[in-house]
Length: 375
Image (cartoon, rainbow, N blue to C red; front, side):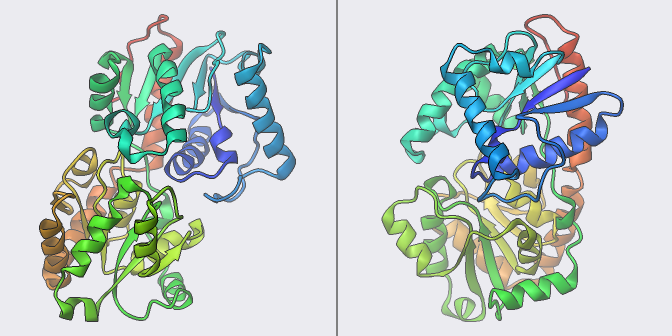
């Protein structure tokens, strides 16, 4: 069996989706054995993962983006040609006219565009409205959490039997960041004091204003001993939020190679997001043994389990109290660190790839409206 994966998101600036696709394709290829995993556009060995740039060279990137434009906006059967001989074509949310000569599948990462449209830029909403049509046409869908599956059934009316829950994975470097790299990153970013860390795009869904309010309400003694460090690219945040973020210890975009040691260097990881389909930063912090404070909504309780302090993200008091509780309790930090490392072992890319490959096998051998499950 041959599977063709739409890899165009690897050619553009992206965060969670790009992280998923990069590691997923890499591990699918390792798991495929005599079967094969092709990509559109054709990519051989993937270059280093960068969220702010393409993983391919300039010409290949231009060619891939141009081919997608031809596939989406002309009658040319570009994707049909690319998918010839494939049993399954796995589309991204950038595809508008999927091929008809293979079973169609896709990955659903979250449903915020439908559940919380006020948190998104107009361009995102337009793209996801188009993606909804592909989701309804797909023979099978991978949801990155049970929460995302349930929301897809509720918000989009997709039959549950067409959705397989396959949790995403965590890159291996988060499980065992080298101590020397942790110290080097701490020095390079000037992180002399212990700190609370947030990692993510600065956008409304991440609830940075809530985190900043909670931090401002923390006792002065806590704020004198610890820094609040914010890392991630500036997204479509309101100007007022962007100004508040820049007034803090804001690192901006952090290269992928620095992310694991930076995470491991933190005393506490704070992630009060209003909605997550999976929540990579939370899973990564747990893998690194950093105690986590996160939200009690969407997929985050499913991913964190009993290995984090869960709070109402819209409650400044709950978030403040949880941060102070962790920062003043070494024994609780040690307990959550151990629980987090153990729980994070559930989220390995090898496991994700093996379950995904089984999903593809079932889909390729099923009828036009395949009933698949990889729970």
